Image 1 (cartoon, protein in one colour):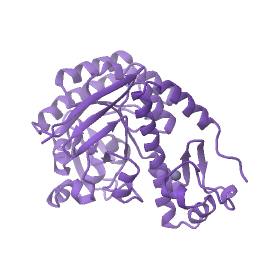
Image 2 (tube, protein in one colour):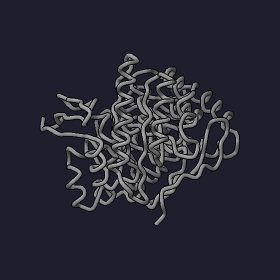
Image 3 (spheres, rainbow, N blue to C red):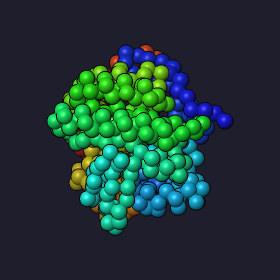
Length: 375
Ligand SMILES: [Zn+2]
């Protein structure tokens, strides 16, 4: 059986490209992971997600532990079989969503008890329970259970939270055990404090992980502050392991993160926006609900090869969005995911060929144009 490994193939400035090998297939980096919250990327068949170019999906521990439960998914053969996706899956630890979604939380050294946002039932998550759930799901890349304060927060709060997360990281490593072919990623915390980030990175290195995430960003600090942190945080982590920026982001966030040494990202934005009519293209962002599209026979992007752009007009997409037809979510989600994967593919090639900076300049200039002029 192939073990889990990372082959860093080329760097260009701080940007990196490589391949993560797993028994379920390779993940080309930089990689964008579509989010399959409740064992589905909403409005997409798994084979369609694959057709956009995705090598790996993200599943949410918090949602799956509540419904249909990790134990039920395990009895049914694991998450890959359950949702018909045979390629790699990364699961988060549940910690972040407990903090953002659950009611009546109580945080102790042991873990977090909380009430389900679905039915009010009481649950507990700890490093040990999170590792157990992610094992039951059959996740290929497991995330450490951590705690992350919303920003802004004062330094003492950020430091205490980071230190708790490092103790939980050691417990996660212990509970994960020896599972060949599966990976456990540590999560760096420390807010926007460079020295706390360095301490966190050192604590994680000492424990030792197959990959490392930059956690605690994209929580309301804004792009400038996030990029400021990414100017040092990835460099504090081991060079020879994948680096994952959690929960990011808009196309320009993703490109800026790759420019700063990030290898993996995930975000609900392209799929969620597909359901709200927001469309990302080479030229910028458009909203299909606007009346300017109702008589427009042109595609969203004439250079895009996705089914929405090859086979349908803006006028049709506007019509099915306004009439709330299900195909609207299907086509717009497909386009957005396709666009994101196109960016990743272009970046991988640009880095390998040593022209990432020129590619980034062109990406930024093209997107600054905004949408095509109305007819
Ligand atoms: Zn398209």
